[in-house]
Amino acid sequence: MTVLNPERHAAPAANVFQSRIPGVGDFSLRPLQVPADMPLLHRWVTQDYARYWGMQQATLAEVSDAYRALQQGAHTACYLGLYHGQPAFLLECYHPAHDVLGAHYPVQTGDCGMHFLVAPPERRIPGFTRAVMRVILDFLFGDPATRRVVVEPDVRNDKIHAINRHAGFVYQQEIELPHKRAHLAFCTREHYAAALGLAQ
Image (cartoon, rainbow, N blue to C red; front, side, top):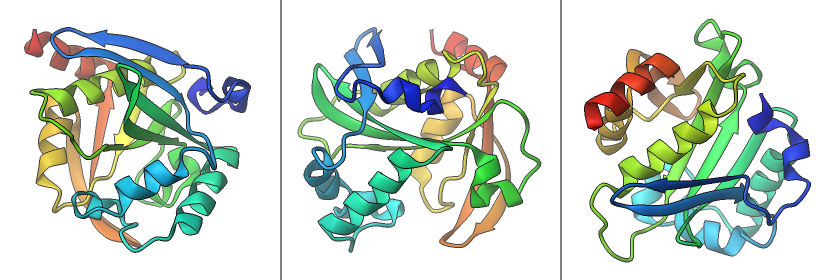
């Protein structure tokens, strides 16, 4: 999948995707930069609202090491999402076949695993997280090789379950991962298109 192609990271500061969501505003994505983005990301992941991210006690060095490894991995990629040019969310993409998740379901060609974390809000913008999900899915499905997006959110994270279902994810079953009990859910191009149609 080209979303995981290291060649797309040749210009680290360059946007790789831009989108305007009606009623919300302008978004873009660029590859995450290590170490430049790490103080910001460390501030996000160590706050209580990000407890399901599992890095609340992490040091800046530990966060930097983790994301350096992800950016250098052959089957992972991370992007910083911008809203009107300002950092607003983190996107992680990965190949499920090369992740612990791959042991829990039959991975198909074209599957793309995804995690995202929205920045702590400075002001409330109605529909913002749903808009972020739309940007992410537009980006991932913009790659012709991506046939299905796979997520495995913590079963306790009710807020993200509502966002996922609104975007077209279909929940399958609960699975036991090393660090959490999770729901396994999939969103195909058809599911996403149907969800967009219902949202119009």
